[in-house]
Length: 380
Ligand SMILES: *Cc1c(COP(=O)(O)O)cnc(C)c1O
Picture 1: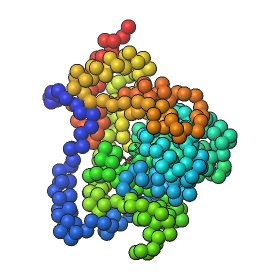
Picture 2: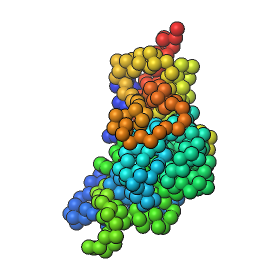
Picture 3: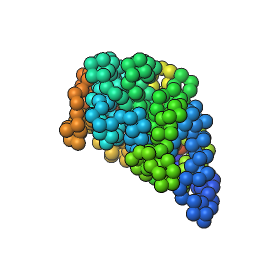
Picture 4: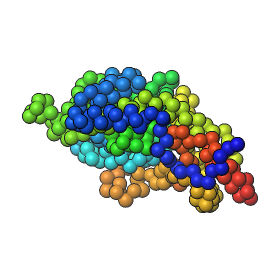
């Protein structure tokens, strides 16, 4: 007998493995007693594990995913007045990082099939604007179908490509980590991300030793010796306690990702009504189950489904409701847009159903039943 479910939260981070909490408290206890708060073994150990798990030569931890983007851009020497291509559909931090280093963002329309950038628009912008850099974001638990093409194009045109993998921890591309072959990429350890900390955290990944050293230096005040500085950087170190928390989380990351994958696949198999499209990763990808993405083109039906979910005490989200170029904070920094404006329609059609590690079968059934019942009954 399945347990009767009355509420399903959009996200619940309280479900951890037996023993996780106890082991963590023990580690925290010893670190606090030793007053080891900056750097040290937990940070080195974390970076080492990230390098091995992701197949990259260098993993540099930092304070958060937004700093990771800014560190990468600064290490790439992207700054004052440089043109940088950015996706029009992404989290605001992707756009923000470009502006914060003094560069000028050019927005690229979304490819509504995978949520990445439209390849043709991206290519046109590269040919016409000759930007210094481009940023792409791997959203929703996978990456763009054109990843190899984008990487090759940028390489051949001398455009440095930064890959925002804040949501992509655990994503497999062509049977290997999506981070492995990037020039430089980043992730976020924000608690709700796939590998979440007990607060803020982030990392930069690269195979290039010079880039790695620059990122490391910039994240520690541009320091070259205790009181010697070769750059104006800032303080973007990852706390030792956060690194320790992440190390304990990494012990269970495969199980957490498996549970997420099971949840997103459940929705993909169970919700098949023609008025709703559940996005699936392009070929060559194995998703990490970061989130479910449904598209409902009929906006009245979408609003009605949202009210139905609310009444049924089922959490949902809209990742993301608006494109970058439509944010009021973006206006004075925009330097033209490439592609159509599919982003706007795409954003308003998205609804995300509950996904988190160890969501139960009963909860998944409850969500699918409510959605399916609504879709069948709202048929014209
Ligand atoms: C979460 C996120 C970020 C920012 O990460 P923080 O750690 O919150 O600073 C950047 N880009 C994308 C795509 C994200 O999802």
